[in-house]
Image 1 (cartoon, rainbow, N blue to C red):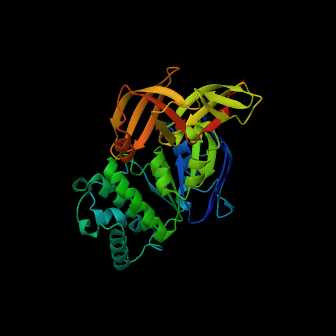
Image 2: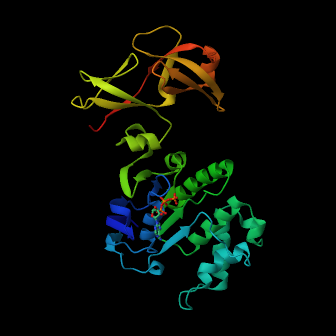
Length: 349
Ligand code: ATP
């Protein structure tokens, strides 16, 4: 089932939470809505679900206008960050719930319900917990049960709002991979909300980067990471050093390093460089940024150096452990930085 979001605007009083949004979710796709807190991700998900009525625009399901279709008729399944499973029901009963509350005409027989619930519990690899109550489960297990419950009614669309947001990093990472595998088996059109760029890049087929109720960019993880359409996307998708620079004869200069400025008519530009895309050397170099290492921190697989540049900017440089072992970089040393990659955006006059 494809979804089309057409010119959607949603206001809360004088505040515009969604500002004329357009977006297509392809059938069978796993799409991530990514953006900072308050940018409108949840509101967009709720509009798609039919839990929120837009002030303007349309939602199309499989090409048909569903804007006025009631949430119950949209055939969507939900998983929320704090999905309250029914506390007084076992895992089995929680998953069976959506089937049991159907009208007599559409309700499956007990035997069919039993078979189906066990199949779903097997799919989320938790059949062995069928007789437990939610309080006896871990957070990660609860979210997997919540997903099984959402899938029980065979939704055409699955909507997930920060489903792993409340879990610790390790469990979160496991569940991400597990969600991706599950999606590859089921191909159910899914939209999930996250503010974690790593999660969006790892899990989604395409990522929608949102900011202040608008879409900054839509693309595959590679597209949004490698060719960010705006400075916002560049900064949101990873750590970045930012240098304010004057433009001179088509070049933006930072220390001795020069970068081609895209808009040569502008007199100022901002140069963005990711910490892991900087080479460093002890040999003086006129086309490098000179600085002094003021801090060396171990981040696990990598090492992060803080370098104070001659103009007092702090530049973050990230090295693999191997490169740090080769270089033995130490606090207090003078170094010369050469960015391998940079993005230059003209500054508005
Ligand atoms: P988060 O990651 O923090 O959940 P979000 O991107 O999901 O953020 P939304 O929950 O969609 O953001 O909210 C977008 C904006 O709309 C916020 O500024 C929020 O305060 C506002 N908002 C959301 N729901 C309402 C409401 N019912 N009444 C008034 N303002 C609202």
